[in-house]
Amino acid sequence: MLPSQKTIGIIGGGQLGKMLMEAGKPWNLKYHILDTADAPASALASKHIVGGLMDADKILELASECDVITYEIEHIHLGVLKELEAKGKIIIPSPKILEIIQDKGLQKLFFKQHNIPTTDFELAENQSEWTDKLQKLKGDKVAAKLRKGGYDGKGVELIVKKDILEDYNKIPFSESVVLEEFVENAIELSVIVARNSKGEICTFPTVEMEFDPKANLVEFLFSPANIDSKIEEKAKNIAKECILKMQGIGVFAVEMFLDKNNEIFVNEIAPRPHNSGHHTIEACYTSQYEQLNRILIDLPLGNTDLICPSAMLNLLGAEDVNGAYEITGLDTILSLKGVYIHLYNKSITKPKRKMGHITVLGESIEEVKQKAAKIKAVQGMKQL
Image (tube, rainbow, N blue to C red; front, top):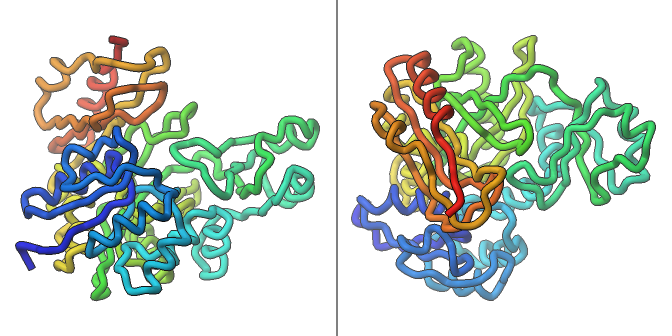
């Protein structure tokens, strides 16, 4: 019920935490965060515990002051979260799910064990295993992913099998990896799923994503995706199946590939609000952030219908700009109807760093794409 007397603790204080707090401010929700001193979300937090996300003592301090804990990044101290949950602390999503998701190898094994459609894969513990493992996979290309520690396109390499088999020195990683068959000409989809402690589950409309090929980051997305209703239903059902089989509570992004035969393969799951759901702030009746707040304080799930077609563009750090910066082109961008800018309160930029995003609304997906193209043409960044 509202007003809620619960204090929400967030491990991490980046843009996802910031937007979660922005969504909760109309309800006067109270948040404590744990992150470094320059965390973007610090200005909105009731309390900011300064520390690292792998610092068990700092996580214990946060937990002692909060009724419920969530996190906005996967690379956090798992052991202390498992101990806290065993003692009765509410942590959403559960550390049991985080343990699977932190390790891309365990994720793929989970999909396989639970008959969730995913691409064929092999696990290589070290470089000496690559040759044997690569030869077991079909196709000319393979996606190589570090099992642990990768994020925002880091720790992922698209490789040509022949290159590696001919030259051992071209193996990009020395650590444990997942080697996955590459889906040629795939459409990349994402479904945001929400499930609460009462077992209510719902999905947001499927999103179609376009990636920056160099940074392997979402550059542009639009909703509704350009897929027919049967594929949409199939994608949503697979996404819900993933979360139900994980017994997940929280907000999750299920990323998928759609191949030329209309087969869907689950790529990865994020146990938190996601870049592919930023547009929901303006484009849906309930945003992914409000939905997570509802789950954290035991309110019913909100309506996830799309109000109108939408797109989202990431504002990424320019290749030639490091340090203090200024975003350019805003006069033109803000003159467009149905355009919303979100800046992440990051004082310093570097190449391909996520600095903000722009949501575009329109009466049709064609109108949305036209406006997005205009924005992309004029938006820039310069050094201060």
